[in-house]
Length: 329
Image (cartoon, rainbow, N blue to C red; front, side):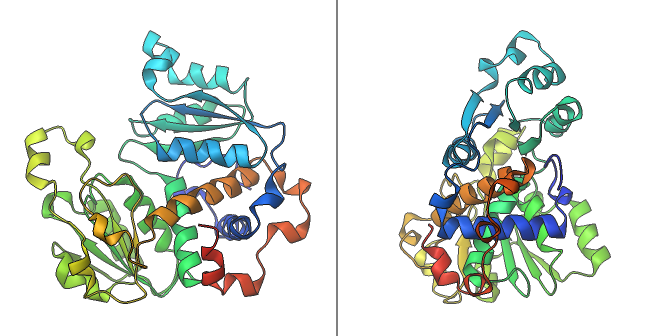
């Protein structure tokens, strides 16, 4: 198995199948994993504030029976005193068995992994990637449809700075006959290198700025917020915020079995009148994120030796029954 998770491309197909299988089984049988991580310690090193990701990681480790240490802001770390990121990594790896790192600057978790003696998980690095959010997204989509191929996926909002959509499109491109609809204003469209990769692989995609005209085609609608913290020019942010708002009226044209996802937090891009629609899965998605991170920790710490074979894998009947898997949310 992989030693660190820094980029979504680090995950091989066999790694991913394993993690998805374990996450699916956790959703059905969470109590069977209560002591798998007993005696293990996770350090959550969040140099950038976060609610969902940090608490999701901490919940995952605690649900496995392990412990948690760490900090939630750069000002609470020795980085505020001038300590290098490498020295922080060397020291903290003496105190824990695995690290989860969030940083506002791209590739800082990679520097930590280069000197760490324990596995390092990238919990989001600037506008680069957010691989565990992508694991969460994949688990959720698989729970909903029972598959990860032959889907039309709409990505809407901030596709330029949105690290979650960068990771998701890379991973979903591995599966056959998936199509992408890239819904964003020109200034926030998908980076050129990702478009070039789609072209190279011959993957079908559409570029548009119109959500209303696209929604009827979609199996998955992945909404993102316009990220104020990523804009150097705040006037540009003010001009673009609120450009896409999903509400019940727009859902009228969508497929009945479409699923709406969002990495959260939302601002105003999904109206609260969508929350009770059966297609709204973004809060279930947050729950599945805990299971995805539990499965990832099991993988990186090689805890499978402590479990019976029957605990590790979801049976074929469970994989094909997304309604049953919903109960974990």
